[in-house]
Image: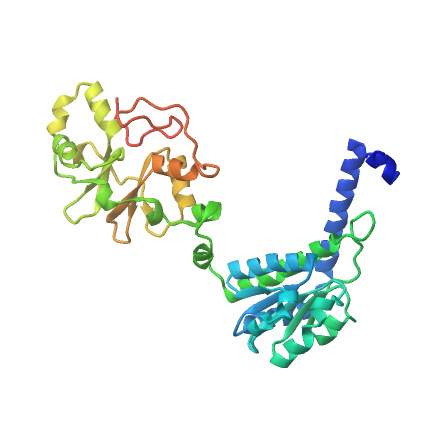
Length: 366
């Protein structure tokens, strides 16, 4: 017997699938709008409890609420609030020892009567840890035991049977997000702190500072502006794959200009061999585009793209070079995700081929 015959239902057409999908999303969205409209002083009380917490925020919940609780725990932890998840079943077998009087317990149960959660309440209260409840039943055992109740109200599940946690878990997660993010903003959680907690993946790439990505000065080609072009290229070699530019400094060690391999190639192509023995400062690009130490990588990538350059010196607050951002290093770094700057066809420059979409800087007049 087919599944269709056994269930007595016919398969949904594509039109019906879209219609039901939209209804579910619309219903859950309307529930969140209603939840936002009904947010009152109890929310602020919950925020104050979390801000005053001298220990950890202990999040607990069972089943789907527990899975939502684990996500809320992660959001709290990543935005500056010390938080841990406590599984109710494990708690009654010894893990309650993790709870201290200076903790705050954030307990999740839509019914407010989940047995595994309610069994914990007397012990938590005996420890002196305040309870913040997220529930859909303000008259429940959980709500009665809590110091603050965030009431989700009456919610109809989006499930066609009205049974599977769907709209309720969406509302519960949204409430947890609101709580975590308001606490974080009130505490003044800074981008620098966020970066410390997100060193990997696309967030890590986005939040990295230029000094974490640049080639340090020891791996860059640096010369005095008073040297001739011939002397500069003869004496500025470095092991490994070299960058396409030489940073030039004045007598005080300040960055005064930049000269690229592409500039050298154009000199040779135009048969200006005599210029090779002239001081490089006569032909270098003065006051090149730079980026300050401590700048986040997205800004550096914007500069590379906007100015159509391939090398970006990194300078300290005194204007002295400390390294160089090379476009090929950026492309290699971004290849693990969606690169912000994408290479096109290689150019014919002497430094091995840079993207035509980001031509080499500092071109000499023809």
